Length: 463
Length: 94
Image (tube, rainbow over all chains, first blue to last red):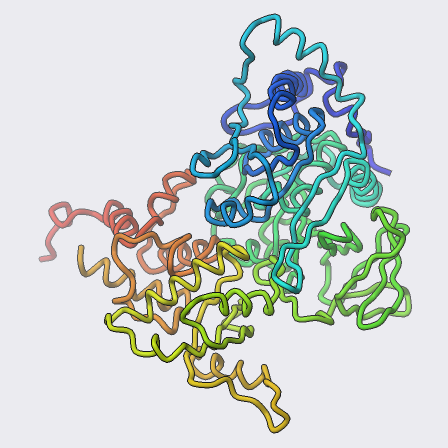
């Protein structure tokens, strides 16, 4: 059992914790009391604002929690989009009524409220009333938090969580690895609005009572320049793989990796660099956390979290978990089990792939390409280049576009295709390479053989 | 500086394995990320490592400084040039 005390969501901002530092770092540390005050004022402001669905987009972990709690207390539904790019938001504006952000989105056709800790209301009386009305101890734990993930059709798949489910998940993690977080500050390279970030960058540290570094880490030099404290480092396989291990590591007590499988050689390098354990989490947006493992050797499989089990279904597994709303959740990952119940994922039953931890449907990429006026036919496949997986697009252009007038016509056309796909599906779904051919090859049965299409990329890639 | 910009374009093509692209397809002042090349934050980390290894420069720990430096080939070239000793400061070899 952890030495940490579990703090339920309704107690995060309790009066008796007012002096407790909950966020630290740039631009300044914040106590639970300061967060409560700012959330109360924002909540009063949001209650007067029309629109139910609030898209919450920000990198600063403290402002994220400010928006999350203020919106929930105002009775709004929080929408967590996978991308913050303006063209992506414009393309998906029908999914939200207003934006809460630390960025400026003036071009969007909906209200955009800046998340700030210097907020105020018109009069001192209004502020006093807002503070008196604000009671996070009475937060409705069934308030929804809606996340997006990639569906197989290309349309975003909406996943609804609640504060109650997130608290249950945090308790499960607290009971399993909570003691490893003691006396640390959580530092992260993960966006707070991804489920993994929502769980581990917001709910788990606040429920475990450890401070969170406000700013997000983007590269090694930022991490190495952090003030000397003991850190829990929350990251992902693609970020960890690209760390500069020649720089001196800060004092890291534990690294947590999720959102994709971490190759053991990277896990080994990270553990050598930090001289600390690495805990890998297996989970998904629909299912939450399912398994965990300490990467102390290459053959360690995942152990299911308490109460989590799997049964084989039709081209899928059925997940039984104490942290999902429904009794059974379909899981499209292929799992390999040991007799002792430990397991590891080894692929997917469907055509969903993961590029740098983001789930992408190749069918959706194909559909987006077919929406471009120049494209007559297309397929999207994956190819490996070095240690990264990329999307390659095989495109048949309509006759009128096969010989562009300008010298750089093909390059500009590729840029247009990428921009269209990024706006529809997010920037990770953009094909890295395009191959233009006259006809998509088919086998003798008239079927497209994706392995053959992949060869277009393996020959020239030479990596 | 033009030579440095050209070298950087070739480094970008090689380091990020943009095998369909010629260095001449990359405009010196166009945004490298969130733009037409389809590069992302992981590419930024890879490019940062490649630039450090090739030019021996130190990256700043200030994220805003680095965002500006990696905005375009021009900014990156200027960032590298600013860390190199100016020709006048280098003593001539006897």
